[in-house]
Every structure is written in structure tokens, then in C-alpha cells.
Image (tube, rainbow, N blue to C red; front, side):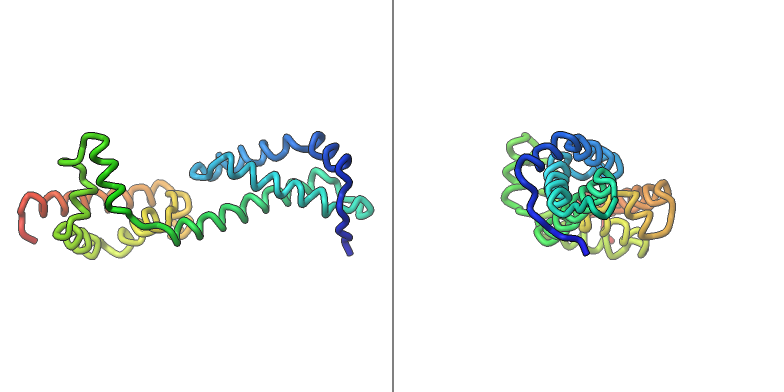
Length: 189
């Protein structure tokens, strides 16, 4: 049974000085594998994992601290990404006023495609366009835009190559763009 004792401050500082660079190294490796992740957040979660490692480590078990800490740091980063992903999916919504304000500030208010799509008529057209997509293309668009998944993650879910997932997404976007362009130019369905 592992005992959890609070580490004295001097020991904590010594362990951090000795093994603290592991946090950055692991965060950089995670960032390479998950480019959407924020490096600063990964490092913060990793620091929490390091502190947990220091407080939970039991030398009497004969385990190398570096190996023990590495797993805890990586686990803390993954847990943070999971929590953050749930928050993002729960809070993912468009603030139409914010979009309009940003488009006006950029000088593109009259031609901003997102503003055009958010108007009532075009929102219905976009819904129709999405419903017209083949099921796999719709799934890819939904995973990419609503679940914030990258091509690698989408490929894993669909059990296809990353390149094929990219082609599916590009094909779906091209179909949507063509459909919406025709609708905005007045071509009937």
C-alpha cells in the first residue's frame, strides 16, 4: 500500500529542480502529437502532475522517480485536455453580435461569409446543404466543426487513413460551398 505523506518543502524544491525539465519535455511531445493543445496549459497541468508525483512517491517500492513522475505528468495533461474538451464542446456556440462586430472591425462586414450564412434564409439553406451530404461527409464535418476534432482523430474514429479523412472533409466543404454559392446567387434547389 502506497503511503501519501506530504513532502517537506525542501524536498519538493529539490525534486522540482532535479526533474522539473521533464514537464516541458513531455508538454512539447504532447503538443507535437496534439497540435491544437495549448502548450502553456499542458505545462500547467504537467506541473500539477509533478507535484502530485512528489507527494505520492514512495521510495520503499523501488520504483524510479523519473518513470513514476512521467506517467503522472502525462496523465495530468491528458486529464486536463479531456476536461477542457468537455468544456469547449459544452460552450461551443456562436455569438452573432461578436461575429458581426469582428467582421465590421476587419472591414469585411458586407462580404463576410459567416455573417451571410447566419442570416435567417441562409441558415435554412445551410441546414439543407448539410442534410444533402452523404452520411460519412456529414459525420466528418460534424466531428471537425462541432467536436473540434482534427483529421488524425477523425481518421481514428472512422478507421480510415488520415489522408482519406482529409479528402472526405475537403469534398464535403467543396459540396457545401457549391450548394451555398448557388443558393446565394439565386439558383433554385
